[in-house]
Length: 295
Image (cartoon, rainbow, N blue to C red):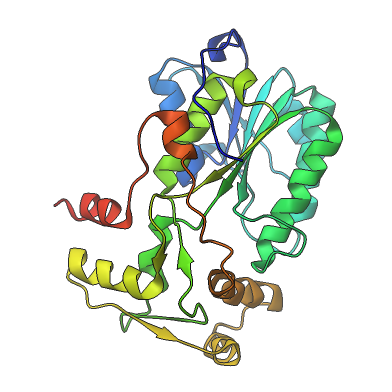
């Protein structure tokens, strides 16, 4: 669903209580810092409060997505919840459902959830199926929601290359409209500050260009000076080349399906949602790498 420019809402972030998860990580941390900079009070939920940033106007509660009782206690008195999807694991969907149940019990009114582009029960990328199931579960509670369906992260693209500077995978000539985590965070903050305007909406969050992995490698080479190339693998070769990691089957399936989702055209879309919601266009890969290199 495409975004539309928003007018200001009577629902003020300063008049409501907001909880933020994932503040020990990238997106949640960016959201928490931005809210604090704007003087908006918040509650940070984390498995280890010692790892949380020390922010003005923020209190901290130690809990996890899988601990129902602790989550209920941490979410009691909260109106709006920014829920960053849990770390990838075999039981992530169960943990998500437990946490959503806790939010419902605690009386949370609105969940802003970081989902994945093309989330569907039959998505090629296996973990996108978990995101679809989580969205469906949140909808079933009857509370207000906003789903941020993020494309692949621009931040992650350089790390696809091995130590030899080669990106290997069965992506064929498919393209990906990757988006930066900083742009996702900016959208999330905008949504949290004007929840009524975004209730019931699902936003595809992408960058403003769709690139093949060959093009990705060329840009990385150009901007960073590190020679990088893309080498196509068959699906069978992809499984063989990842066998040395001795990872569980579900994780290897996720790794390989990251590439096959690109090959199947499931990450091609380019949305204007980031700019529509924040007023600022999203970063390109070249923008991201240039900023990181200090150029």
